[in-house]
Amino acid sequence: MLSLLHFFCLFLLWGTGVGTPDTSLPYMVYLDGNQMVCLHWGFDDLQGDIEFQLTVNTTGWVGFGLSPNGNMIAADIVIGGMGPSEPYFTDRHGKGKFMPLVDDKQSYTLLSMDEKNGQTIMRFQRPIDTCDDQDFLIKDEPIKLIYAYGITDTIEYHKTRRGTKEVNLLNYMPKTFPPNSKYLMATMDKITIPSVHTYYHCKVMKFSKPSRKQHIYRIEPVIEHIDMVHHLLLYNCPSFVNTTYDNMCYVGDQGDTCFGVVGGWAVGGGPFELPEDAGIPFGDDDRDIYFKLEIHYNNPHLETGRTDSSGLKLYYTDQLRQHDVGVLMTGIISSHMPYMIPPKAQEFHTYGVCNTSLFTQMGDPIPDLNVFVVLLHTHLAGRKVRVAQYRDGKQIDFLAVDEHYNFEMQRFKNVGKIKTIKQNDEIAVECTYDTMDRTNVTKMGLATTDEMCLAFIAYYPAIKFRTCTGQPNTTTLYSSDTSHELFEPDNIENYEQVLKKLPQLQIVTDVENNLAFYSKGFVREMKESHTHNTCSQTNASNRLYTRWTMSPGGLMLFLLCIALM
Image 1 (tube, rainbow, N blue to C red):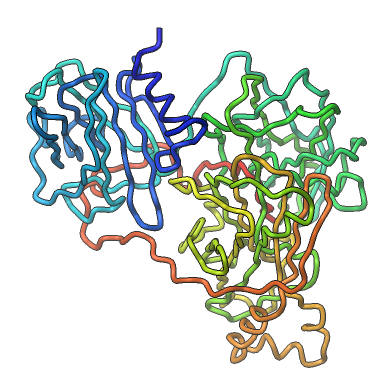
Image 2: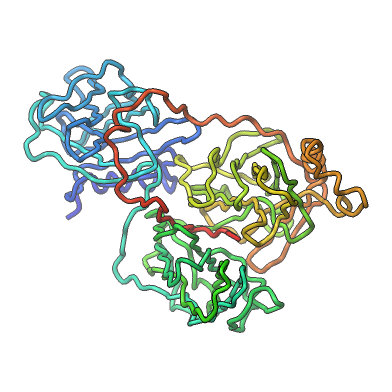
C-alpha cells in the first residue's frame, strides 16, 4: 500500500490545482526507500536562488543537508519544525557525530512551515552560492543530500531515522524503467566512412506502427568510433516520407525534409532521461513511422577502410505520461542566405529572432508552452549564448544564458523553474564569437570550422511547429565589389550594427514542412544578463567537494537535437 506521503507528493508533482503543475518546484525525489521523506525543489539560475520543500511523515523536527561525503562532517544543514506556538528553523553546519552548530550567518530563509495529516512540510530557500564558508556551494554536479528527523520537537539523536541520496539539484535526471518498457535501435549498419575531413551520412528507417501511442522516456547513445563520430541527430519524418534510404545526406532524397527532432548525441554525450511526467510521443497516427538518422563523421587524418554502426537506443513505454514533449529550434539557420563573421574580432554578436505570431498563420492559436530545458549551440568560435524572451515589445526574461560557452561541453540545461512562452512572444538568440585567431571570414554553415547560433527549446504540451528562426536579409549586402571592406578590423563594430539593423527574415515550419514567413522582422535591444555572484573567498564545499561522475571530457547527451556541425 502506498503511504499517505506518496499520494501527497504525487499531488504536488501533478499540480497545485486540478491539472496545473507546480511550476515553481518542478523536481521531486524521495530521499528514502520507504517514501517517507519527499523533496521538491526549483531554482532560478539567473537570479541565483534555489527553493526547497521537504515533506516528512512526522510531527517532530526535520533536518535536511548538503554533504560532501554523505555524513554530517562538513555538511550544510537546516533543522526546523512546528513548535507548540510557532515554527522554528535554523541554518547549521556539521562538525561530526554531534549536534550541528548554528551558522554565524543564516543564509537559508524559511518560507512556510505546516503540520497536517501527520506530516511536517517545510519550505525554504537560499542562494545557490551563499558566499559563506559554513555553507555548501551548490554546483551542477551530483551532491549527497542527507536527511534526518525525530518523532518530537526535541532535537536529539535521530537513531535510524536518517539517510542519504545523491542528486544533481541543478541538472536533475530521474532514472525510471516503467513496466512493459521496450526499446528501438536506430543505428547505422556498417557504413564505410570515406576518407574526407567532413562527411554526413543519412539513413531513413521504417518502424512498424505500434498498436497504440507510445512515449520515449530515455535515450542512450550507441557509439562505435568515438574518435570519428562528431555528432548524430535523429529526426521524425513528415507523413509524405515513405521511402527508406542509406547514403550521403542532402543530395535530393525525400528524407531531406525530416526535421522533427527526436534525440541526438555529440562528443562528450551520455544517456538522457526525460522528466517523470513527460515523454516524446510517437505512434499516435495511423501510419508507419519513419525516422532519419544523421551522423556527422569527422576524419581529419583521412583514414580509409573504417566502418561504423553508431546510433541511438530509444526506450519507450505505452504507459503514457502527463505531457507530450516538443522541441523548437530557434536562432539562425544559415541555409537561406549568406551570413559572414569577420576575422580578428574579439566579440562579434549575431542575432536570430523567433516570432511566434507566425504560428497563427498556419492554424489555431497555440497554448502556453512550458519550457523545462534548453540546449545552446555554436561551433568553435562561440564564447557566449543568450536566449531572451519578449512580450508586448518588452523583454521579460532570459530563457537561458551561458556566459562561458564551451564547445567541448555542450549539453542541455534545466531552466529550473518552468518558464512559459505565450502566443506572440518573441525569442531572440544572441551568440558572441571570438575570431582573433582567424585570418579569413567565417561563414554560417555545416562544417565544424563554420559557425552556427541555435537554441533548442524543449517544452510541453507539444505543438506541430518544429523550427522558428530568423536571420538578417543579406541578399545584397555581400554583392558589391567593396563588400570585403565590411570585414576590416577597424570596421567590425559598424558591420555588426549593419547586420543587426537589417530586416530579419523570420520563418516557422511545422511537422509537414509547411512554412510561414515574415520579411520585416527586427532585433530588439537585449538587457544585460546578471547571473548569480561567484564569491572570491574559498567555500568549504570547494575544499571538500569532488566530482563523482564527470571525466574531464564529460559524458552528456543532447536530448533535443543539436545541429552540431
